[in-house]
Length: 88
Image (spheres, rainbow, N blue to C red):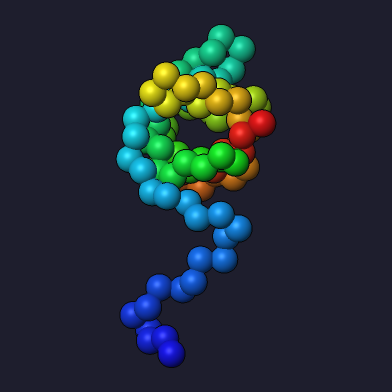
């Protein structure tokens, strides 16, 4: 039995552990950098929050740099300052 206060069950295939790590998205021809906060991270992708959206256009092929790890990725979705990434 569930109540109105219970969160809905997570229907995702894999759990998404929450994180709060600093990272960078490298994008564009000149590998411009956009600072992000990584909100969750799995083998298949990540959800990041842009720390500044001034003039940042996130499209095409990207590199997510977290700690000393670089992962090639593409944008799966974007909503406001949050971006879902799918790793190649």
